[in-house]
Length: 255
Image 1 (cartoon, rainbow, N blue to C red):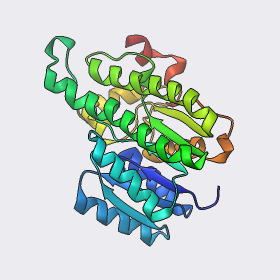
Image 2 (cartoon, rainbow, N blue to C red; image 1 turned 135 degrees about the vertical axis):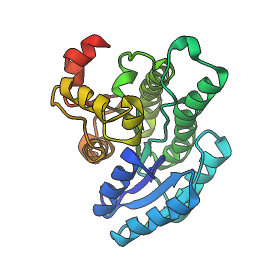
Image 3 (tube, rainbow, N blue to C red; image 1 turned 180 degrees about the horizontal axis):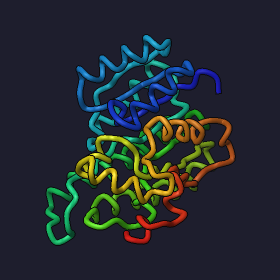
């Protein structure tokens, strides 16, 4: 795929940011989104400095009008969308299921679940007209298993996997591939929130198969593969990028 048009939500930090930078170095045309205008415009400038035509669109994926505007502006700028990376998400605050509130539920499910659904809705709208497109949803290894005191996050990421499989079946007749990536522990702000402090992170790293968490850049490499023509016969797939975590081991057994 030569100079693809790539749309990335949740692009200002972590995996989204690393993915945008990776695509920029390949010369892709980029539309990046997030909720912070000043940070987003600065990041679009950084991407442009790398030689990638780039535009920032402020959007909150919890709102249909925002997502529609994001997708429409991407098409207005570049004429199409070849790859969409639905990365916007939140971990919420870990805690026991007995402490869950309506506000906790809405904070996580409106972003991780409704946000992914709205992105699929509007990306499909464009890609069906094109008769081609590749969508990558960002789930988690915890969308494939459980984790203590993270019921809402785990449930939301299971939903992303379900959306991926259902949308892949719907999209197949229209030339649209839909896959998901399931990162394991990755050195992002969300990882720091889940683990708490350096001592806890060292303890987690010590029982991971590779004795370290992954990097956002490593996840970005896998994301690019899923989005590319190299994965042209891959759809409805959930790619785990977890350093062997799902193969088993002390941390998985204790979960």
